[in-house]
Length: 406
Image 1 (tube, rainbow, N blue to C red):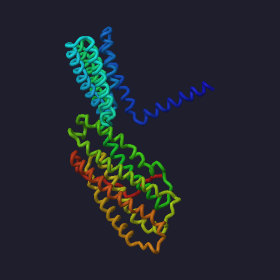
Image 2: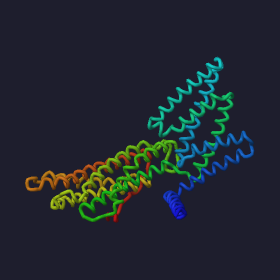
Image 3: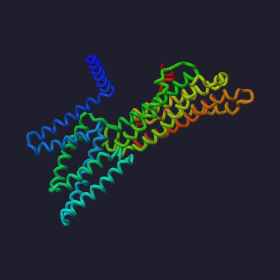
Image 4: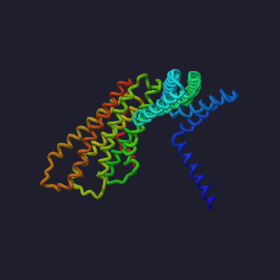
């Protein structure tokens, strides 16, 4: 029984490893890159007795601490580690020089007071979200370096030794990260943005065929908005890391990364509205079938044009082309929304079952709001294309047929 359970656990473990590797093969390459960095450092310090082993351990700790999955993450932690080492070491040396004018007991008291104050300040600063996200490792290294230098009898020598060792490790990590199968946070952010926009398009079509055509479709398509809403933390992290990366590919120096936050905010608002739409797929909600049939045509026109617009915006963003072709689809959606609004204003509530009309009318109202948000997404992407100097050649079009979402 125990043997069977062991092999079952081993099988599940192997499946998990395989799934992680197949989901993103770059993870396997990243593991090989880290292993390469560790091997190179081992060769550098090989056979240098205890002194070399000490430096090797420090270099290995540097590699493990700064070698991140993306180039931006590696550069961010590398700069943090260097700055933290310099500042922490400088404070440690300053403390030693100040302590030379004091007797041994006073020196100990001074050191303990500084340790207490710096420990409290650095720990408190780590509660700030931005510091925690970007500079957390630097804060830890700052405190570690200060203690190492302050308690050492050879402060200046110790800080230069530590800095040199860290530099060797950082240079090794940076070169491997940039020149061997680089993973760019900026590219991942750009692709994620385009993917989220496409997901919104598919969610809208999924809602239409469920609500107006009464066809049951794949829930993964219908609930794609959940993936969009959950990607906010990933977008924030990728945006912060992308700023650290040098120019590469289509991403020039001073690329407008802040614009991605603006676009992402509109995408999240749109996803929230689509989530509200899907609440009305509940079959237990009483609705007027007659009224629903009357607004089906304008609502379907709105959804179809918004789908086309979002697909064009997504494709244009992915290949870094100005999304000008989406404008006409948005204008058609706005025209259909205007017709729908006019119809709703002329409805005679006295002749209708008011309670059964409210849910259908709410759906129509939400579609009008989504139309406005899609226009804002288009405008923000167009602004990005101007700032980032996207290509302005040709037009991206989509098939007039609805996608297969079953």
